[in-house]
Length: 108
Length: 150
Image (cartoon, rainbow over all chains, first blue to last red; front, side, top):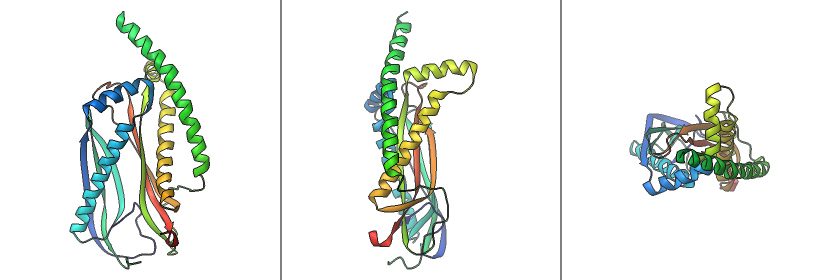
């Protein structure tokens, strides 16, 4: 599965457009981590626990999008966009969407 | 009275540790940027169509928090309006760090260029300290790699 946020795949032709595919994931933080982050907050700096959490969340959303694209027979997703929104205090939603397409000569 | 004392202690701690951490971070960003400049990231949407490259999505993200002192100063600043330098440097650091992480991922794949770089900034303040800004910056783009490096 090829994923790209460009509209074209270099050196390959789009045979068929299959429409929009998407994936999303909502994650809340572990309360313990939240408290640790709160302490860290006093001094500023990076909150590694949150960085990891959002990274995992983004990977999950992406894998859901890929699943959907595979189920409709696509072999690439182009023009991928991410969006993040905090729904409530302590939880964030990651949403990823793109256009599923079929590309030719993916063998090389 | 106790409340005031706690605030003063927090502001003082934020001032000393926050400033030290920020200076260290900026220094490390500048160092790493000098190294990473060989891998240009650009906002162009149309990559070279000569069949030499294949592409893959790369991304980098960072969650960063302001220290107590800066939040306090920014709160005062809010009364009068005007430029809030405390937040400007925070966002600047976060963006540059996110791009550096994206470039690191691209470099580990053997990329030569990164196209169509997009930034995404969101406020994800937690359950505690709702007034403390916690900011996430996510940078993503398409890395172009030469076929021979595959």
